[in-house]
Length: 72
Image 1 (cartoon, helix red, strand yellow):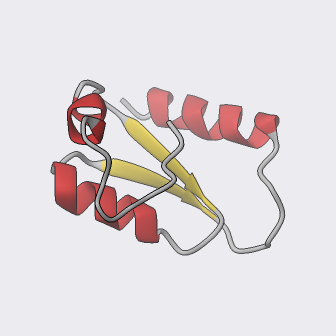
Image 2: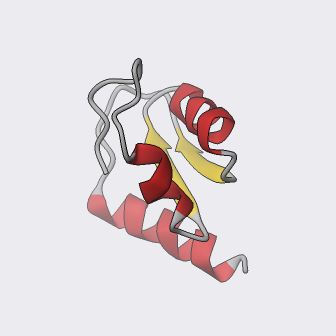
């Protein structure tokens, strides 16, 4: 899901995130969104963070998601 506004958090975001056993949050910063989602939903949101200013490639995100699923 792509969030455009954080305050107020769009209705239904909490319920949508709580439906999944694992949540990965890819961010081009130090993980602020992961912390916000974790505190508002009480779900263990895992962050995939980096600070380069460059977009993530699809291969990077697939690898991060695969690693998250294999950690079970």
